[in-house]
Image 1 (tube, rainbow, N blue to C red):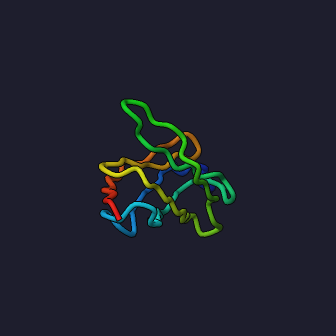
Image 2 (image 1 turned 120 degrees about the horizontal axis):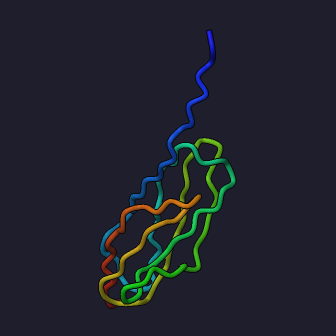
Length: 100
């Protein structure tokens, strides 16, 4: 019997600890990956205008295929974040930042 050598399809999910926070508060983004190696960099991105730009927050995929990263922003209003890892990007997450 031949062992299956089918490649595992790569995937990544995203969730957030909060959806509405005061300016300057930390929000945790976390998720699970499939088919992505341990210690692969996870990069948080924020939508600026019509372009996604790297946000100064990164982490690494764990041996269990999970990640967790904190973002902190004082940009009041609607913010959209996502993560990029191993050529994949997640759906965007809406974050409302309110005045303190």
